[in-house]
Image (tube, rainbow over all chains, first blue to last red; front, side, top):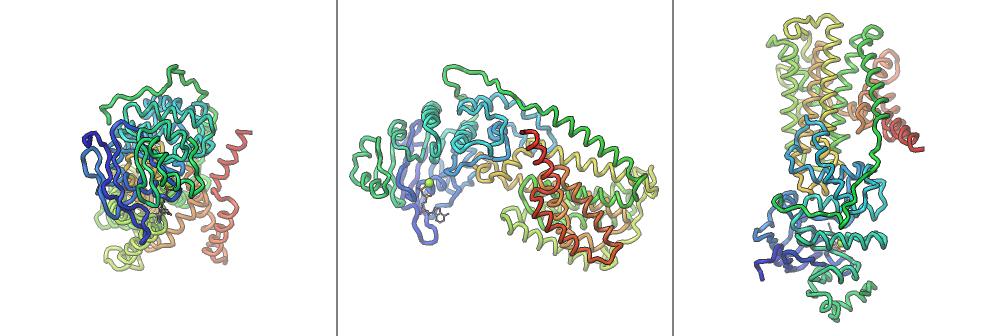
Length: 254
Length: 335
Ligand SMILES: Nc1ncnc2c1ncn2[C@@H]1O[C@H](COP(=O)(O)OP(=O)(O)O)[C@@H](O)[C@H]1O
Ligand SMILES: [Mg+2]
């Protein structure tokens, strides 16, 4: 089984000035699955994401991606290996248009990103692909608006389109549905399902009905430690998990 | 990653994306007319105004545009740009006067020197963020100031005086004020065009992305430090181009151009005109240079008056003059 583990954390810990945000986390994400990371606010989910993508340096532990130890790598290089993240707080380029937001993710493989003497028209060939991605998240009417003009939920959709533009092997989505309206949630959940066909997804999400519906495996984090792991049916019946969720008033309802 | 086939994202119905592309036609016409008028004014200027005054404006405008490339399009506040401007002035002046090189080669040497200095500064400062970045660039530029004060070839308090303007390409005598003026205008236009191109290039796109949200740019696989370093080197080189040219205009390279006040002045020009706009720094430089030469003829304390105007402008026009005008036009177009 271990051979189809694409991303693994071994004994991953992170301390912030003595405060242990993530403690001895062992996580195995299997290739081709949708893996959800859930837990109350402050459990350390985003910190785990930051560690896995090297935006934070672990205090202890090891990260292995596709059999390769990436613990010492830089975040941009991790992204180049196909391990790409989104952010919990909407991360768009506000003063670029929606089209440009996606195009900036598409342009790197052209190898002209340092070419300051080339005209912008050299990027026009990326337009069709960019529009396809924009269409996939239902943003076509917004394509020429600046990202700053989008309502919050639409910004999240744009972020997904931008992440998808890299065609990543592993996608880490931090609360991709937060702030979306009902319709967008359904549409985005369906999109996540669709794009998961040939990639692996690790996501943090509070919407438990979506988590129940989408994920193959769920890991529950509490106070930086793994509390439970398994398919939804098993995890949701775990008394400790129920207590953890009751304790913060975030009762699961799926 | 590249080998993997791209998923078809559109669900079942490949609904063709037919969107109304915003028509930039009108914008472009207005812009072309404005640029045409500006060019005509620049060509006619030496017949109306003192050529030396307009050349000074052009040199500072290029300096401010170079600075703006960094703060306006890469989001980096350098507080040491005088080192490139003034440093190049010394190199150009020395090359023209002591080595007897032609004006174009002298300016080129000054520009290359500023670019290399920028590479050194950038390598040391680029990893720092915000105020720390500004402080390191300031500290480094102060080192350049003290070197200019101590080294022999820079002439200490006297600077390098009596720099010959020479013959451009061995043909055009730059002692003729008009020839010199059109040469400076050409240098400005080349520098400005390069900045315009950079801003509207694949590199410029990445730079803007970094300015807008650096962590996101990193997460998309961009090693942002390298992009910022290239922007820094370009900006330093162009600041050097401006400084080297200025030393031939005034036939002088002096300590004034490497002081921290000069670094401050270019910040002021850029903010006043509108950072992140292409023409803002030109307008800002024009206003500051005009004010300074006007105030020089009065008893008023120049720095205090300029400072006060700056404070008022920053409070009233947060986006700078050109920035506010653009915002006004954008609002007008919407309604
Ligand atoms: N950069 C940081 N410095 C100090 N404490 C942090 C930092 N980032 C996160 N924390 C703390 O770590 C804990 C986990 O945070 P986070 O990973 O964001 O939780 P979650 O995403 O599960 O809501 C919180 O108590 C938070 O305050
Ligand atoms: Mg979080």
